[in-house]
Length: 187
Image 1 (cartoon, rainbow, N blue to C red):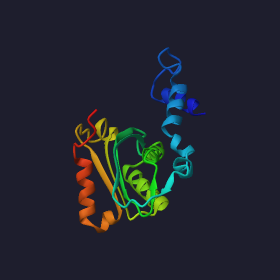
Image 2 (cartoon, one colour; image 1 turned 180 degrees about the vertical axis):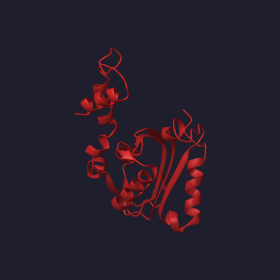
Image 3 (tube, helix red, strand yellow; image 1 turned 135 degrees about the vertical axis):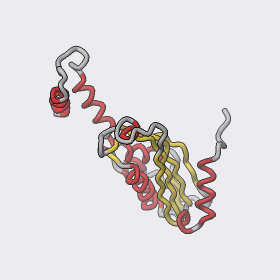
Image 4 (tube, helix red, strand yellow; image 1 turned 60 degrees about the horizontal axis):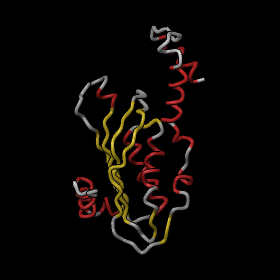
């Protein structure tokens, strides 16, 4: 069905949908859109997959620089960037690979960056019931670069701070310092 709609769209744009370069485009676009919106076929329970563990760890857990790609729901153009996620455990920790998987699930839906940020934070908060959750998302939006204001060097930054990250300036500052630092693995 999507392929037929894309074929009609090409015709509406003044193209010959049957010419050599476009003949298979409707099917390719359908396949791409199904992949780029595959987050609708996934749910939190499947992503977390029982990877919650009781552990007496009460320091900050940070997973930073999680690459993501999404589609802006306003123009169906890509936006992409990095998510930085942290939580302060309260008797439960989460398998570390689940955080990038959660980012992936929500980013593979038609999105706005603000909702993406709060969905990640809210889901972790609900699943873990930690002392706090922090999420910062930095992204480049092609809808701002290719059309509209056409500002090539603009980046959008959104945050969601819950619990101790909202109530404690020190905790928030530590998180912000950790995600901006160039400290990384040297391999």
